[in-house]
Length: 255
Image (cartoon, rainbow, N blue to C red; front, side, top):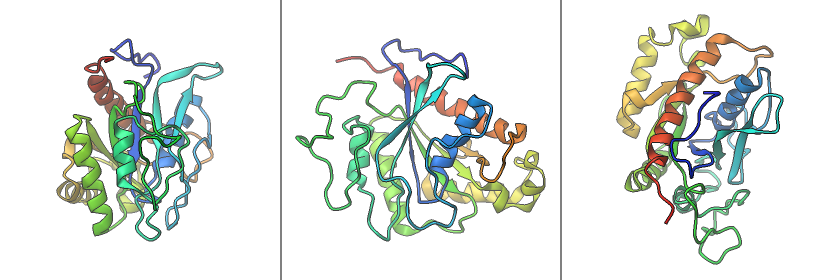
């Protein structure tokens, strides 16, 4: 991954849009990726704790991964958005649809009462291929028994919009250690766990993301030192995400 360069020379960075419920681990995934590339613990993206009902992310925020000990960045970015919570109605699915097309400026603050529209200061009227999303990733907590109907509907609506644009999609199941004692004892048991396999199949049938596009991950949370087993799962997921995004971006052309 350290030597990755987009196939399309017009693409500065593969844009990865993360979405999912509050506390699923979107910001923690960004931090975990950054930890690996910096070789130490970092805290770039503010993360909510697991059972938090209020999202820490309120803006359309893009995170770059700095190349270790340099002023340069890797050619992929993560865009974090407000959690798909129901209580306060903080998410506008219409805004996320606009983000997929590249119409949303960085640092735009989501407004549950009013979607972004052409003419607003944070609206990009003529987005470049670098403003557009190149791969959509759904982050979900493997330890949650059932997806709330409203959240599921939001997920499906976002997925439909991405599908209409041809944007590739994957899912990451987080908190896999909390979901299965066998994995908690040894993270290398991840693909041996029947319990996790059932969770992944249940998720596949609910959200309709294929099993081979659903990736189990344990984010860094309580650790104070790096762990090669944690790194391996995160890097496996990251490689597939970037490969999918790069394949899509390779087909884009400047109008």
